[in-house]
Picture (cartoon, rainbow, N blue to C red):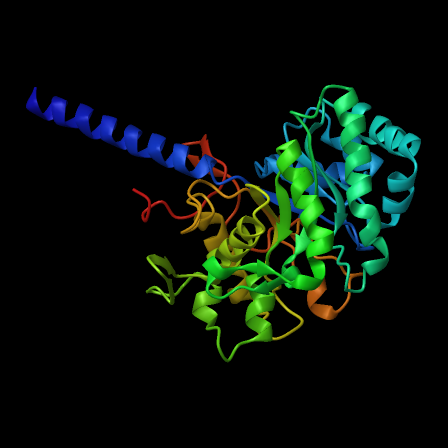
Length: 362
């Protein structure tokens, strides 16, 4: 009788532990960015089937590729749908074009395609190489938003834009994060719109490029989430990895505008496995594995899971420079590049959305 009770108790404890793992890991909110700049990639249908078979629940598309959208029907995958920079001017200056864009690429597919976000423009910078698009970003966002709102979908589908971290002028310490003075006239009205529309800001955050640009002051361990101790103290907040420090510097930069609270969704993050400085397979594997583990828990400045999209789905051989070809978590032949994944099974039962060794979690 005592032995039986012990066995029952052990079974209950195991089930509770597995249930706890399930709850914690499914909150990780990891997605992937599906780029198509390769001449050896599988079809869109094969790519979506690959995502489904690997339990990938979220995806970013950079343009409204019709074959991909068709393949996403009834897949259960939540989608961040992109408006390419090349379309911004027409959408910004002609409301009818915005309405047509939404009809063709959103309403014709929603809700069988679970469109969650629309990213209007990617990494447009008013003082960078994409400056010609800058004046069109906010009016394009507003026109798309109004077309979505006209169908009463503005609470279900959030409209925003994706920035990179070059707009941050001060990032150290994170609490002193601020935008560069020469981009404030561009960003502040966008932040004001996001507050009004209760929409997040999308941000492409790469520890790799920060490390590559400053390996003298940034350690590889800090960049790869492998530092055993706090590296940066910011008052009472301790930073053990660069990703958190970068993200919190953006949180602070938004807060320090005084405009209002805006959530951040990490619309890209990754590490190339070849093609440049520190682009080894092992570095990429360690970064991505630790990123997937880490984003379920928040940053020192913001608690809660961090919705994050890994760049990218496949290696893309038509991108430049060379290292840009090696960001994929899958090879073009659909083989997994890394041993970790998005699906875990115990005794044949799916338990969680991302998989890695359980011994550290139980």
